[in-house]
Image (spheres, helix red, strand yellow):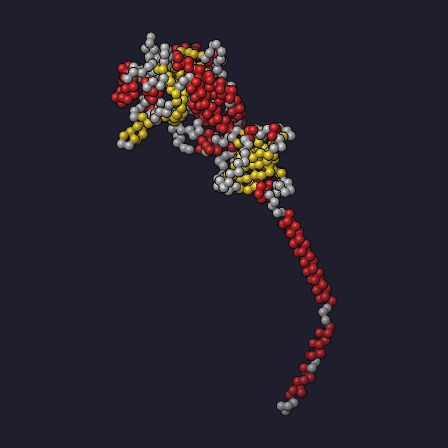
Amino acid sequence: MADSQPSQQQPQDAPQAPAADGEALKGPSKNELKKRAKEEEKARKAAEKAAKQAELEAQKAAADVDFATEFYGKLPLNQSQSRPGRKRTPVASLSPDLDGQTVLVRARVQASRAQGSKMVFLNLRQRTDSVQALLILAQGKVSKQMIKWAAGLQTESIVLAEGVVKKAPEPINSATVQDVELHLTQLHLISGLDVKLPFTVEDANRPEQAQQTEEDPEYKRVLLDTRLNNRVVDLRTTTNQAIFKLQAGIGILFREFLEGQGFIEIHSPKLQGAATESGASVFEVSYFKGKAFLAQSPQLAKQMAIAADFERVYEIGPVFRAENANTHRHMTEFIGLDLEMAIEEHYHEVMELLDSLFLHIFRGLSQKYAKEIEVVRKQFPADEFKWREGPEGTLKLSFKQAVDLLVEDGVSREELDDIDTTNEKRLGGIVREKYETDYFIIDKFPVTLRPFYTMPDPEDPTVSNSYDFFMRGEEILSGAQRVHDATLLAEQMRRSGINPESMKSYLQAFQLGCPPHGGGGIGLERVVMLFLKLNNIRRASLFPRDPKRLEP
């Protein structure tokens, strides 16, 4: 029975094998074959597409090779590796005479404007001058990458630009150099910015009238405090570049005239052992175990130099006034242009020399700095400063005559024991209308209005041999004949509440014998402000100091 079991199972297994063999012989269906064909076609097309894409990318990579890398980019931080001696050309000297010549210019990027990916315009500024520069796509010379890099330069970046000077097809109004443009061949970054600009130089350079009336929503008015808080950026404007070039010019003209008149330049100390004129307006500072004072003027040193037989001296230097005056014309530190000279016969010798000095300065500014004056007037429009030439000479009024003019104009005489700032300006208007001048002199001030060292009038002891000079109705010089007699000087010290013992060394200079002498002190920033009509003395000071400002 056991042997019969396999023979019984055999018939059951036999039918299964032929069924499997039948399926194998039958093969894939038509649908399956179509499906496989589609997949193979799809794979073939994908392979062709990939090959084509790879070829295109290879072609694009070959086309995008930056052939201009040596013509642009950031220069090394330390540029002293070599000294090739390449000549730099000032922007101001670019002209049609240089047409076709290659020049090298260092300048700031004042503005940039890209035109697509093939061209970028740059406005390059150097001090008071600017020129339009173009960077144009050129095979083998200027690449797309170079164009893109140049277009991305930050405003106020400093660049070294090489280019060919080309005559402009029409005047370029956006630049001071209007008859040529620079076609760039190389452009390198010398110095970029690490912080955001507080305002643009373009906004800071707008005319004052525009600042008051502009309604453009993109327009940004730059207030004076904002300017002074960010003075480095503000000083970059073409207006400020012109203002301080003109200010330097005043110093040059001042020295030029006085040296031609036999004056010697001196340098006096600014630390004093006693208050120079009155203790109320002098800065007191600690000095080791004692105290000292910042010089209110070089007055004492100038007079002592005359006693030392220097005859004629001048100084340009800082003076300090501890006056808590927050006005448009006062600062706690400013630059004084001071002079002192021996008198032969009459103190008007000094006054007349000072007058000649001012006329020399006015003429020199008008002749030598006409370009700078024009630049400033674009932002600060003003009537041209007027003074009198010819035989009539400068207008000279006595203090009494000045008071009479104001009384005739409706000012009460009781208000005019002194001529305050308001009435000074009013007098300036009267004088301009009546005498057609912005510059005049007032002589013979009351003794009570002058410092202790001022010489009284020999005939009327209530007035003094003193004078003030005015521009546009504001004082720009105060001066006088000085007391050169030690006894009289000590008396006037006591009368002014000053102990002669506190100024012993000064007094001693006159005890040793001193010639009659006189002089005056000019406020440099005030002259600049009034000549250009800047309306605020802080605009004429590099880094102004007043009761509220010690920085920057």
